[in-house]
Amino acid sequence: MQKRNELYRGKAKTLYSTDNPELLILEFRNDTSSGNGIRIEQFDRKGIINNKLNSFFMMKLEEAFIPTQIEKLLSDNEVLVKKLKMFPVECILRNRIAGSLSKRLGMEEGVILNPPLFELFLKNDAKHDPMINESYCNTFNWVSTKDLEKIRELTYNINNILVNIFNSVDLILVDFKLEFGLFKGEVILGDEVSLDVMRLWDKTTMNKMDKDRFRQNLGGLIEAYEAVAYRLGVNIY
Ligand code: ATP
Ligand code: TYD
Image 1 (cartoon, rainbow, N blue to C red):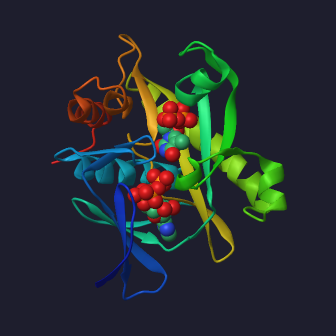
Image 2 (cartoon, helix red, strand yellow; image 1 turned 90 degrees about the vertical axis):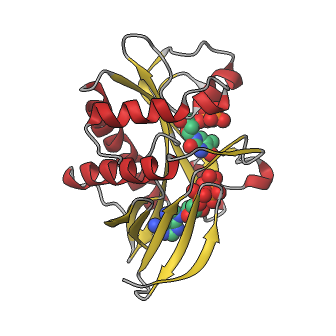
């Protein structure tokens, strides 16, 4: 597999073309952003840890018959993926109140949401990723009704799988963000499933083990990511 041109440099990952027009290389960098890129810092080893954890989660999802972009782990910070036509939306699933939901509704962090909440945000940094709904997706042709139904079903299934994985190592999956795209007409999970795009709390101490350590200046970001990888038995070295 030949790496060709840089196609896109996002806030945390870079996309490269390959000699196969159907495949891309996703490179996980050490850059860590918050507030839609207002604050960016580098953390040694974060790219490696997220790349390895992303592959671990996507493989687990594949085993559970969730269609994902993953083809092959290529190196410490690169993975070969299917080139998707991404939907311009971020899908958020919440098992407990936290973050923007807590702020928006003035509700206490940690309250269990039953059933879990499914939210949609438009991918638009300039407009700070505004919240949208199914009607917007339909009217503005961002996602068809049929594809959105599939995305919603997949997101709830992915939640069940991830909750079980984390529960078995005494972690609470509070919420997470997913991005989907189309590959030959099929809805596929793209982007990443890593500690940058989810909230994870320790079941006993309720300590935050995710990117909130950076967002809230708690310190120990990489130590927390390493501890999660260790509990899951994922080799990050
Ligand atoms: P955000 O953090 O809001 O997603 P970003 O573009 O800065 O924005 P990065 O994760 O740095 O985020 O960049 C990765 C980009 O690659 C995203 O725009 C994502 O939608 C896109 N992408 C992810 N997976 C694939 C894929 N399999 N095929 C095509 N594009 C993809
Ligand atoms: P949310 O509480 O809406 O936003 P914030 O992180 O600003 O408080 O985020 C819910 C979950 O989705 C959380 O685990 C972070 C993740 N997320 C992303 O990874 N990227 C995003 O652009 C957004 C809006 C959320």
